[in-house]
Image (cartoon, rainbow, N blue to C red):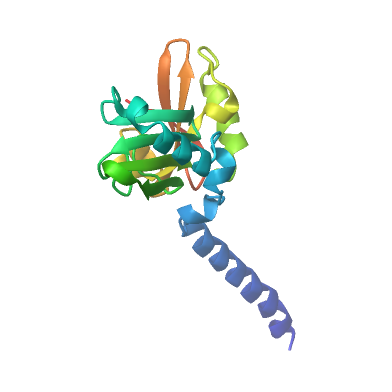
Length: 198
């Protein structure tokens, strides 16, 4: 009977260790790191106002437009513009696709499209900014924290050293510094700084 009392805690400990190791081996789900946002809440010019102004001043605005008219932008957050022709499902205005990159499109008359490319907020953003500032202590970001672009990406689509991530995914940060723009990578699972893009 006494052997049973000793076996129970050992079995519970073994199950706990196995569960811990199994859960630790799982990768992150990138979409679980993304906070949803309404596009109308992040743009400076409301959709209706932007489109009405464009339609009422079409000739004047498009005369020298060269196919694209940017009407609003906040670095790291969104770019709001009109483009001639099909803008597609995902323009490259925010450095290509990321799991937290969003696009809003509305077809207009005369072959123009109203577009907003935006970045949805992610979890642990303050941690990533703090780590970036630590890594850039000799050349700190010159932009406000809210203008540091953060994209969750598959590491195979990123330049080295993103491939060193333990996770399949990385968090890519882009920030302006006195010596130019830098791109930094963080492991999406461990949240550790990996390095700067080569």
